[in-house]
Image (cartoon, rainbow, N blue to C red; front, side, top):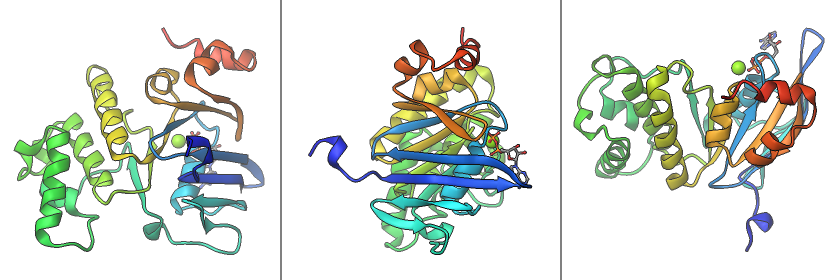
Length: 246
Ligand code: ADP
Ligand code: MG
């Protein structure tokens, strides 16, 4: 089967959300397939995090539907709770548990399976993020970049169907950021999850996305492969937005 005929891992249909009478998410629809990274890219305040929070299930949409693997998880009357959506989360300030070791942080979301199986999964992921030597350390003994990699391993450990990442690299030092972006992308591809990465940085979207959904004032104004979105901007505002890249 070609990619186009398989069921999307994540599909959102016509999501709308108001705050204080203002439409902050305005008819947003997206499809993401397994192994694909889609970047929701747009300026601060355009509604990216609200969209992501509705998919995660921690915010309710006013109207619209969310589907995971061809199954409805949320519309206006039916709602699967966040912990049963098989979604991994990574936020800038989504801290590790300070009182748990690196191993226990990564194992935190693993339910079911034997102790040995859990340990094997933890070791596998820590090896892949090059932190196996820190398995018994505590978060305060790690650098910011290392903590971020543990957070990634923790999010991926239960093999989520979807990874939602909200500006996950914005707290990191500039010098570290590109390396961690590349490493994160490689691991996400190996895990074959569907990724929705929220960012306000065009450069990050160009580097990481298979597809960019450009968002402005609550709406997706353009969508496509990074090269196409960058070389054929939809309007002057899109040109200005991308002109920050150097
Ligand atoms: P982004 O992530 O793109 O910066 P957000 O989704 O966080 O944007 O916010 C979109 C708009 O919705 C902003 O104007 C923000 O102030 C508003 N907003 C977000 N959350 C709330 C809330 N809980 N109550 C009221 N307004 C909110
Ligand atoms: Mg945000």
